[in-house]
Length: 364
Image (cartoon, rainbow, N blue to C red):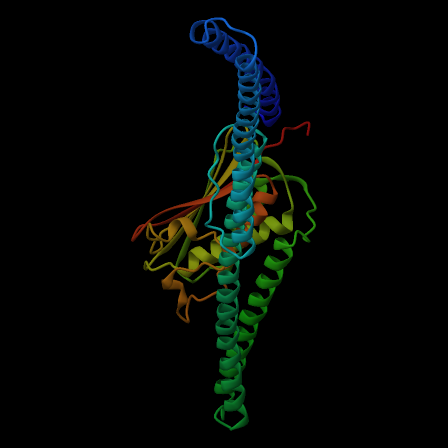
């Protein structure tokens, strides 16, 4: 019942109850007058009758107004006191102090909104804590990942300065290693810079009509050339009769495919490295599947591989370490294109990364 109705009924009751009580008192006193006082209505007895009627009426008025005011006030003040206490607790940082919601009046609605606010604040606090933990992990990860190539570069530079590279072959080896470590450092900084811009929504997208069939055909051919002589087998599977038109930013799509393939090649533990790229279509989406025959990902880690700064334990060694944001960048770019990305994996068998992009027709 709303507070307005409650007050209205209370005011009506304050009128009706005394009136009904007055008639009741008249009946009772009339009974007493005619049966106890033998109907005598003069002198001292009539004064007693009138005084008793007046006192009874006053008592009824006081009790009626007092009790109704008390119960109505209690139904309003008590919830307000609870809200006030809850506000103090939340102001003090106690977001576990809940407000019990009863009824459906305005105060109950306020309490319900207050409880929703408390839950939202608690969720926000949990998100902030998680963000802070991610930030600390990022700092630790960046410190480690930046220090590793820098330490190597300093070591080889000191080796050259101290005359350790005393032959042209050693000098060439040292210089190649320094160049490779510098490239790793540059790639790491580039990944961090890209992710920070994506996180701040400051990356412009230049969408164009793109035929994924032709695009992936060229990409796979270039990949075969780059991996030539490294024991890698690259295959491209596509139905030539279908259309594979999407609207995408070519440069960002290059980064998506590159990050997925680089991540797949990191964990190739078979003698022959196999990478299969599948292109398929549905009425609404174009799907790309990149399948490897690597070590696979355990079921505990699989749901988190696209989380920011997440890295499986196996990737924390010197040979496969990275920033842990390559696949997070993939997810963000694909979602910004209106698509989805997910992974399926089986330990010891390999991993498949799936990417979908909205399909566009010939007239789009």
